[in-house]
Amino acid sequence: MAQTDITSAERDGMGPHGTKVGLLRVLGPAHVWALGVGIVLVGEYMGWNFAVGKGGAYAALMACWFAGILYSCVAMIDSEVTSTVAAAGGQYTQAKHIIGPLMAFNVGLYLVFAYTMLEAANAITAGYLVSVVATMTGYGGELDQRPFIILVIMFLAWLNYRGVLATLTFNLVITAIAFAAIIVLFISTSGIVGDGIMQHAALFEGHEKPYGWIGIVAAMHFGLWFYLGIEGTTQAAEEVRSPARALPFGTLAGIMTLLIAATLTWYICSGVLPWEFLGDGVNGSVAPLFDTARLSGSNALIWFLGIGTLFATLASANGCINDASRAWFALGRDKYLPAWFGAVHPQYRTPYRAIVFLVPIALIFALGAPLDQVITFSILSGLLGYTFMPLNILMFRKKWPMGTIKRGYEHPFHPIPAIVLLSLCGFTFFAVFLGYGTQLVAMIGFYIVVSLWFHFWRYRFVNRGAQFTMPWPKPQGY
Image (cartoon, rainbow, N blue to C red; front, side):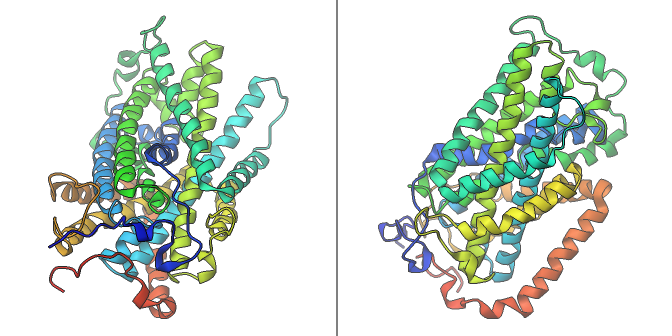
């Protein structure tokens, strides 16, 4: 059977369903890398250290590596399916074509909530950073962080409104600087250049497993924060010039970058900061890399890591607005939500209504919820999405076996990555339940309620005949 190329010329320059005004194809592999790494790198600057509080420094390292395996499976699976289903919506569009409408609707919501909560967490961190800098420069009194939180979200929403090329080019620059800051901090504190200040042996002595093995299991919850969001590269599928090349290259380069950054971050911070301070979510470290730089005694390093932390939060929030709006836009375009959200700006060629609509939701959580709760909501939504992916790739390979359609990338050792991913997801659900069981039950209950709403009410408005937009042959067995 002849292979079918999904990146055929007749789709270029158009949105699906033959819309006259579509999203622009202007991005390359570097932009995809910047989108994936830009969203995630803030996880190295804040949030991951809550894993230390769950089980100690060694537990955080084990969570970092196990989560790295989980996300490597995510990146490989996503690279294959998304380079083939090259349309906005990422995993939502995959689910629509491969599994069915109800799964697609839920996956779309998982994406929107994961990215919107992550955006709120970034804004909270940016507000904290501004207050610390104000204190360092001699500002008297307590600085109100709320105006800065609002300013960050509003500015980045405006940038996304104005165009995707400028948005992700901005991300490329500030993400590269934030990653370089981690490298510079490692070189400066490890003794490679100058005197090292790391004391792993002294800090770890007697605290290898402060809460036993159950603490190591619980640490897996926040271990995901090192990498959460790399799957967001799929949201650029309709705006890259060559999906079959750019998406796999950018995604896989991104996960390799993050594996290096995550391991270096753990090594740097655990060697300088006591684990009790590092893992305390109330009175401890909010931005561990920045706090490590403050103990280095170098003003230049403090300012560079301050800039790196700010850039990491801006890059992540910027990418989150991009990805959440694309998922919401795709749901509206397919009438899973009101079609009003599926509009493209006639000049800027962006999903402007989806961008504007999600701004107040992010502000509500950024201004009214604690950081660890916001992070947990983002992790849970992402985790539900990852649990869907093994089923997705197994059905994809069964319905369209190798050789029936052209794939931009073929992930190796199938179905081992799918089995590993599903196993690690189950393990992480248990880890989340240990510390945040109420939130886990509440969020699953929420998704059950909206699923019932979609099934009994919203699905009647969906144009079922227009859902399958890929020019693929009939699935095997149908």
